[in-house]
Image (cartoon, rainbow, N blue to C red):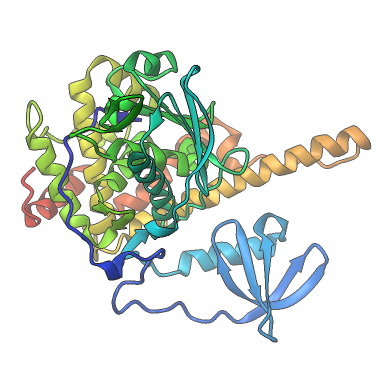
Length: 428
């Protein structure tokens, strides 16, 4: 969910050489070592091959003759799953320099335009979005490239996220003309946009993107910006992990992505410091100025229900929460330890493994129900520990938080965060 957006930030123009449909390795980055061959238990028999790549879902095996084969990770045996988990744990953190799209290759397909019903449907490679008004060509191209650029950004960040639609072959979104329609669609009060897991789509009102009418179409207003769009897109790209993440990470990661300098479909991760300063400066222009950070010990304990209630009832307090969530994620990504995001990536890899266990269990349970209906002799799948009880869930959350604390108390962490931001010229 996104609070009401802050004023548009000024972004530096990227060089033409940076506008490439890729994620670049930082200067001096080391390529991962070649993995030795081993025995893999595939559905059609055991094979000897080396692990080429693994993105959390798909394993690519490399055979001695140089050929490669893609295999779904859920189809492998327990020994293979353990090997993959250990392999992931050892992988170095590689932060992309930039991530985005080649704007010349973005294509938007008009699916339908029904002026009478105020329903205009557009489609890109990975998205299908419905608007309650016809968008001008310039606005349509900008929205489309921001959709696709955010998809590439979340995929490129070392968070172990493999963006896939919950259903169908594209992500879905709804852009509505007014706040009234937004709230009728379930939009919480005092919010600028929200992602609905139940409906598998995100919804944003035009005014929170800075879109105004122009004749029978809609175009960019003077306050147009993509912050809210990027924020909600990030939630959507991370949908499979949201129920395992505390709200400060759910919202902090979305604030982090929309703080990164974005220009012509390209996010500059290496310019996160510039994004940080712009983010804080935008706070200074708002009523009340830069809010005091929310107490970190309390931030770690907030439930999703408490977070949403604060947003609706006390929006000023929610500004503090969003601001602090951003500061935490940005700190763990770029300031903690060696500044390489190691602890945060370790945390996200742990979440990814738990997510995979849950998804495997759901697949096994579906197969179990089918087999039980056919023969009644299928073995019941074992529920993952995290789903066994509320106590297990609480213990999981505690253990994952300990990854980030790394032996520190919240008071010690708070002092380190303040000192780190002070070195960046941000006085908290």
